[in-house]
Length: 360
Image 1 (cartoon, one colour):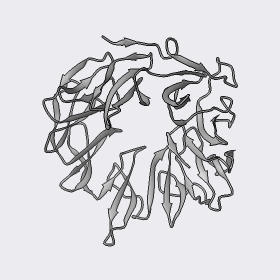
Image 2 (tube, helix red, strand yellow):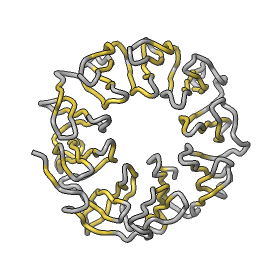
Image 3 (cartoon, one colour):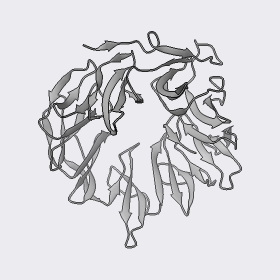
């Protein structure tokens, strides 16, 4: 039986005043810690709440910020919605982000803190799985995978194990297929009937993206389609997923230096192996590092403007994180490379809440 405890009804612990009408909710852009208070900004650079007294702020997903707040000597993890309400899931010492409307709960014993136990809570407050599993994946396309000493299999959003495995491990579904592994380990894919549709022959396998999945076979990475056929043969030292019709692929040279190039699903190189580090394409642009500095490129590998940065993040909703080489500025730039939102130099910690990555 599932345990019902509506996130923002039965277990509200406090309400935080927001600085805007509850009828006009704004998606958060970033959060930063300054003088012991967390400031959360929207995409116009305006504060969504009054500065918050939090222990941690670690991310945002599906309408909820993931926070930790002190209550006396105790610290509790909870979800803060954009209306300013905080809910603490019962019996959890740690929580993860919502994904496909389900978040992972984590617990552990005081005498064995290194052994973690996992469960799930839905965003309507229903605990669909108590923290009894030794491992659990995020949910996607309606299923997550759990395992402990007595059971392993895919769980649905009602908390029911819908398909069990005798051995091995599974992953969430992407584009209707999920990675599955045996105990060798070798990897393949099952469909939503939980039938193996791509044999377990790969040394490494990843989720499908834009119709292709990245796999490692015989020591090299290539890409297969939904039938398991190689569309791009395994020939790369390493590779990222296919994003926006482009793939970053890596080559390792004699001095163990790794360099990156841009490859297309049409089996063409767009650049030589010239990049020291890369971030995947987003909104038609990618971040690349060359000669110890970062800049932005378009889908052909050409710079979108001449400016270089100490560090940058991917574009989303027309804004990207950037920090100047000399440290004089940091904040969010537009597609012209101009700063639209500046973050105070004194900020101690900064998290980009669109990607849930700490940029400082």
